[in-house]
Image (cartoon, rainbow, N blue to C red; front, side, top):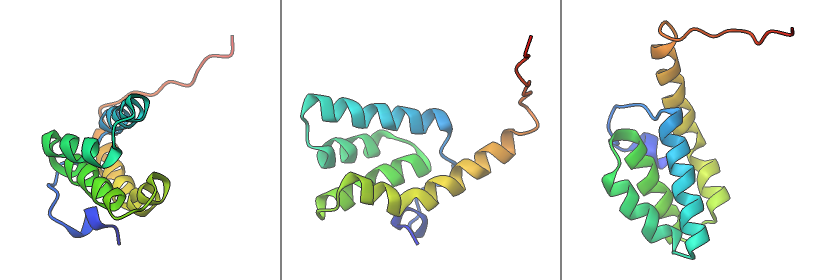
Length: 102
């Protein structure tokens, strides 16, 4: 079980847009040469619900010496469950079209 799923972390699911923003934040921190642990902890304080919880847990794992890849792998279950809930809720609202081959 991931740390984010075992804590309170809020009930709002993580959206694809939020995960994209988190990814962009990680990229920006790396490019700036900033410590990921501190940057993610600060970002996690400002982010709502489950996204904030996952971000803070990632920061905590990095502070304990885990590499980013391992930390993300450990938390992927919490992220997937959240995305699954979000996509099921939005399934009736989205219209998907198959690309035309013409």
